[in-house]
Length: 342
Ligand code: NAP
Image (tube, rainbow, N blue to C red; front, top):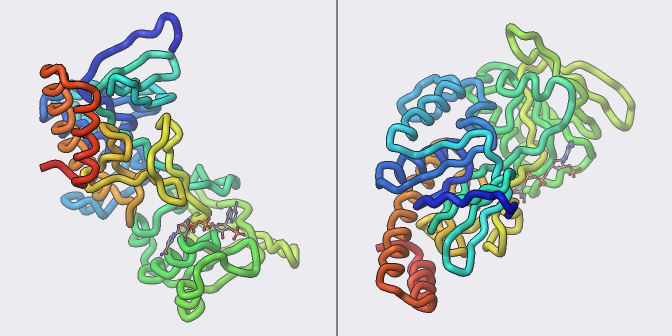
């Protein structure tokens, strides 16, 4: 903490303003909880990297940034205070049971509960054109974007489970899928590999890396330049889509102290979205779960917000009653062992 740091008191602090954070803010606002939402950029999260979505119920086709604006306006309507361009450096549980959420300017947001919805980051290839055509041909989510590539030719990069599974999924829409892997052997499980080898719409291109995404400002991506590392051949694939599956990093770095997580670093929660650190809830892409969709992020954030409200109410009651730390710990552990609030 810097010597001039200010400490602001809230009921709940939400880290991240993607679909999960904004949904959580809507619900904590409606519950009349004093809510601070800290977002390092602007509200929207991955929505801001997505051109169109067609899988949000009620919105058959909506621009990512439009949906982000609607979410933010709706969340703010119930009183949550949004702090944009505010980077969080740590969320730490203090001995008195309060969380201190510290920003890069050294300010502290103090609250009995925190909801971390900081998302995750798909690992990028880092090639020219990749970011320029992100959302306009380049994607990191087949379930989200496959339907935009009906009857088209797309390329997938990667050789793990995600690449082979999503490549197979893409053939439901695309006419042809090039599966490009930098080695001559997939890392993916054998059963998933077999689906790919049995699928006539998939052509595997071994020993090859993607070098550049080509396109034009009007139509988006028009081709992918690739390089065979064995033959040194370079060629242009006539693909209008590129799906990159070379790994994903959950943004858990802000959580200070131990929390239970899976082997890939995703945060484990109970069914109320509470982590192994009582009072700390998570929702969205950094949580261990089957899938990472706008709808699941919103659903889990709804649960997290309602559970946080109940947690905060009990926390304050116990404080008023002068409860001892031991009693508070008993409440917290009973919550964890029960797997949810009643
Ligand atoms: P992953 O297993 O780490 O595989 C990443 C793949 O990307 C590897 O084949 C790697 O190549 C390649 N790669 C990495 N950096 C690259 C680069 N710069 N350029 C080109 N290729 C690059 O990641 P994942 O497929 O996302 O899977 C993550 C975890 O989720 C795994 O544990 C996986 O089992 C699990 N998962 C399971 C399922 C399922 O069971 N249905 C589905 C999806 C994910 P190399 O092989 O040469 O290193």
